[in-house]
Image (cartoon, rainbow, N blue to C red; front, side, top):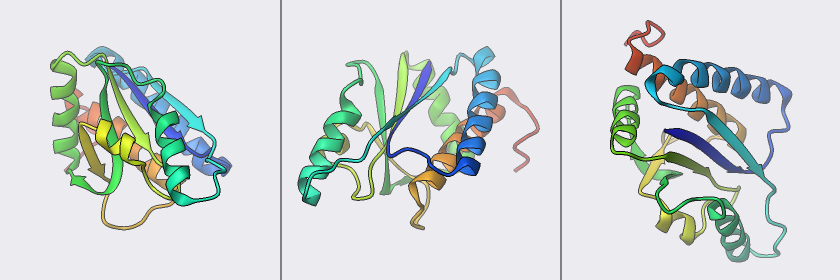
Length: 160
């Protein structure tokens, strides 16, 4: 199962980008024998629309532009479902085993997701109740994807 992260906003901080790239590479390598990956990350510019509603609508349309009809869509959303790392790994396994070709994770812009993105999401996932900057949310998501692959493979990275 391919994994895609489509995010509004570009990582400008070189340290955050380096961490994301490191875990993405690890995840793609560890996931290959499990049928997970490769991991593709797409960055989309923030909308320049003058009001929040229009920005959210524009960003949602662009986030969904490349989503296929058989893709499993996960929207990162502060009010979404919170999973443990083990439960997230089980979710990834079940999604893969259910025949999903691509699992797409959507990260919205500073104003959040538009309704179209939330409506398209089969799962709304929370990374926790704290507000995270978008770059850090991306770091946490990619690390958890790597952690999920290590849990599924029995690798000692996850020691809980």
